[in-house]
Amino acid sequence: MDNFTFAKDKQLVIFELDDVLFPSKDYLLQVYYLFAQFIEYTEQKNAANILDFMRNHYEASGTEDLFAKTASQFDLDEKYQHNFDLLHQTARLPLKLLLYQNILDFLQELVVNRKKIVIVTAGNPEQQLNKIKQTEWNGLEQYLTVFFVDELNQPKSEVFQNILNDSNLNANEVLVVGANNFDAHQSKLINLPYIESLEIYK
Image (cartoon, rainbow, N blue to C red):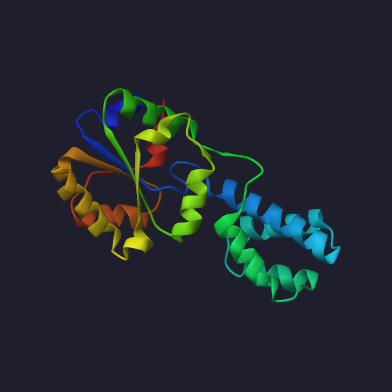
């Protein structure tokens, strides 16, 4: 199926950021790498061992209690929690974040067909903006409009509705592309068509 089949009758497509446009782990693992390097520099502890521990914990259990577990494992002072959190928001990544190939193809088709592209992303606004700034957009950045849900302090469904109102569009003229049940539920609340990002393929 051609990617554009999903959007041929739409005027606007809304995307989440993490695990929709690119893998969230591509950002997090680079943050962990930078933190491990920082600890090696300040505490003379082996960065490779710290990174391996953090990667394994993340892959097994996600981000929950990751700093606490790492601090316990390597006898790190709690003061480094601040550095760990700050890196999530301001890290200068060694490598650019790359869009999923299927999503890049889809975005390019949307631009060619003059469809509006909107990103509505939840999470810390500074961190999400940092990700956007360090993504390789392949020239698509000029076509993007971005809304930060936590900055607006509104439910995602309300942000969606405001976008519809501002664009003078009906729900059936918009498509939401997400990657989790929350995005699906928020879309359903205002009857927006929704698909999982993995459904988009060549």
